[in-house]
Image (cartoon, rainbow, N blue to C red; front, side, top):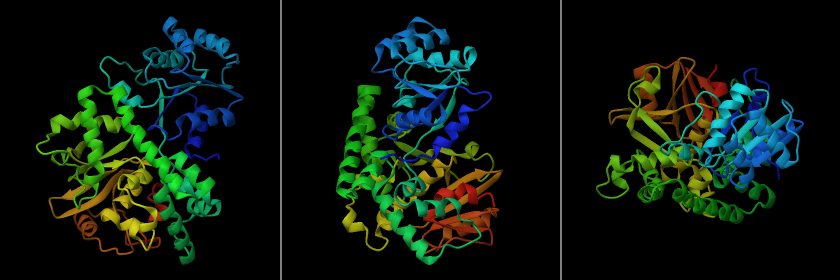
Length: 437
């Protein structure tokens, strides 16, 4: 089946930019980068020429022989037997991570042949670029990041009516109770399935959660196989250790990542590179702590205090080995392991909207799951995994910092009162729209 991705709209806008640069699409393995580039070629261009640099050495050799982008285009067109015309053809360069020549060529396309539309992707590109001696055309490319499907995208694939409601609902109105319950049931399914395209397609086509679980387990087995390709032997061991410890650490009351939990006596300097590797691969997301609420937040973050979340809530469920039949009753799915699945879900919703979150602590007295800045405001976001909304930490934050707006994500209905927005978990993908109020 064909899944609709929201990023396609931004990519179509990229095509028409006056100062368009080659597009580099980032994202973890198996989130659908290659498929989306092909789709862009189909809907926004007259034709699309796709080159897999890893599998087509004859094309890769062209970039080693010449730096002239027009000669490159001419020779690729001859090899592929397809015309590559300025403006009307999308040239897709896939799996570019191992080729310095292709990466460098992006600079020359920008400077000498901007009339050609060039879009690229590569598995573990962020990891490949960290290798010593690798060069990159800084400032010569446009970046976009593709994440697993959001809940709104999942709804589009499973229930277009509800998807339309989520995308258009106004913040001034509460959802009808029946609709709120219907969306909650869909969210439970989403948190079982997650947003990896293959898993979503399995669910839509078969409705068989066992088949979904097989797909998710296969993805989890495949990820460690990538570690060996772009890491040194000593790094591989430590990357695996960090990867294996993630879900155990998230299951604890204090979700702050601790190197000492990897193994007894472990220290930061031994495992910092492994954490960085997983972040660059897009497999995990690092959320740093800040105790100081001043703009810009990134200037006051504490890089030594952080939490690590997984790139997909469905994969995290399988890491925990949570079976669907045992956690669908009541709200157990949301509250299991101190609500970490819910917290991970909200984080991914934030990231998909292009927002950069941190988390706030006040000594050992209070902690708010996320804080982010938007339009010169710092907005705290507390995540509740049920309808219980006792929020001492958020109250402490509001008392101390008097934010213009605070958000509480929970299973309660939509409501804005006294500068506090109660945002249903099912509307987390609308957060960026709603914080403009």
